[in-house]
Image 1 (cartoon, helix red, strand yellow):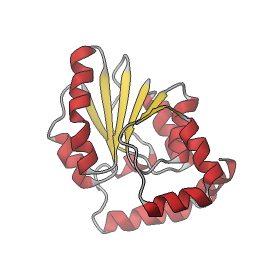
Image 2: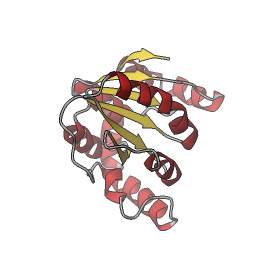
Image 3: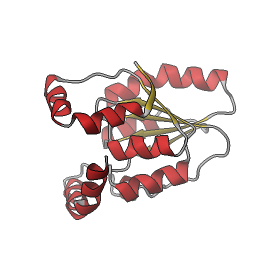
Image 4: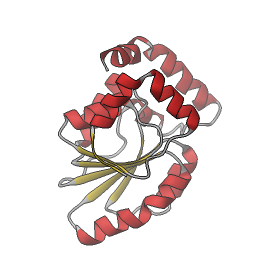
Length: 180
């Protein structure tokens, strides 16, 4: 984990360049670009915050029944819904209520993630994603947030990468209280 964290700091200028290229190619939201660096565009609501993260449109669509159930059974709960693409953000935004805030997930750079977690202070995180980011999951767990992986799956290509980096990835999975 320390090596990954160090690499995310050392390679930060390259990661920034990558995001700037994505922005120039209209793959990032220009108005909300700072969110990718952990700078929030909204204030945190008081009370218990459930953070739901989905990478894609399909994953985002699949989690709505669970979000609705959480809000029905726990009226005091607020939802922070993060995603990584403009397309998923547009779909999520169509369904927002006063209890749900959307933000773009920060890139997995140490300081961006720290800033994000410090601001949002989620109590519970539900990940519906096939990509798990070490800094993000580690900092969330370190802050006292419970993490749940829903619909966890992995392609053969991803599995081969996980085998190469098994020590880092085992630490990622240890951050989760439940995996489905």
